[in-house]
Length: 377
Image 1: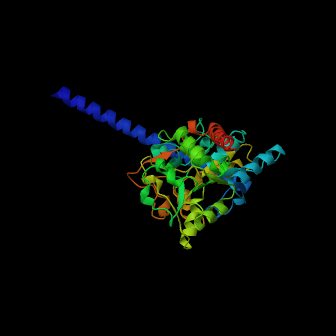
Image 2: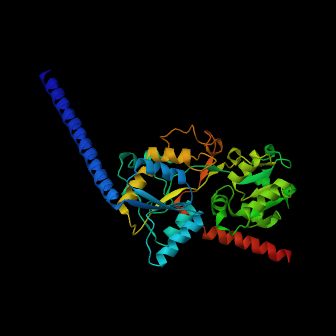
Image 3: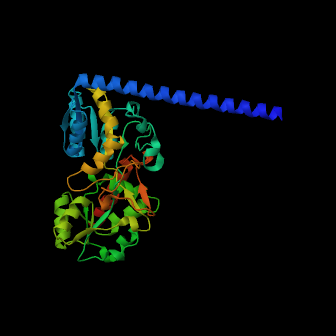
């Protein structure tokens, strides 16, 4: 009896000591990150500025300015490809001006990452909520580079592959991507020029999807008599006028605006199809190397990827729709219905590092198109 009691007392003492140690380590850890945060914030205030090169989200930058008014935000905007090209051009001229870059992930990976213009972003994480990958979709940090350090994808917008003319097509006809290859649609499809970098994410999805792949792309571009255009606006006009029934590469947001204006266009809900929908690789955040305001960049990154920052991204992301953050610990009430992931549906996420090389994708499609053209001569 006495032996059992003594053993119980020993266990209680051990557990008490263990709990005390854990609590002490947690307190020390909390003190450490707070000290680092205050030190970084003081240095950022001394720098007084952060240069953000971004393809969109001006209103999000306004939210950061409100939070940290002592850090001036200088923004350089434009299309992802133009912003990345500017960063590269400046660096070739010996000018290292960018601190943080927020562009499409394909652009960030294939242009900036490959040009070795980035520093690892992960070491800049200071806030405890950023040190916990379980807060993100899939329970892991959404990096697209193999080192999982450089290009952080923060959006999880589902993106349809095909748009259509609502007078010429009944969406219920389509249950699979293979239904688009029905001979009845031959000659009735308009596509953005498949060698355009803007087509990267779409072709990436079709190429790497295990139920589509090369066979699908070969039949689509090789036998469907697809018409190509380099002008998305022209494609939308032709689709609305009924010149074509289906569009590959039309911009979903422009289709949505045209639909609200009463034009007979719409987006096919491919997430309901057999092979599932795709999660677009739209928004990513990276840290430029040789950043002139390294501490202010750290503060911006921690804010931008925090709950508060990502709520602002969701709410203020674009002028006409609320986007969907990959953070899963924030409300989704404000997210535009078109950008919500529907529970129970399949989504193919092409953000895995092994799928980021677009060279084999473009090479394959180019070969298919060239072979088709040679046969028609």
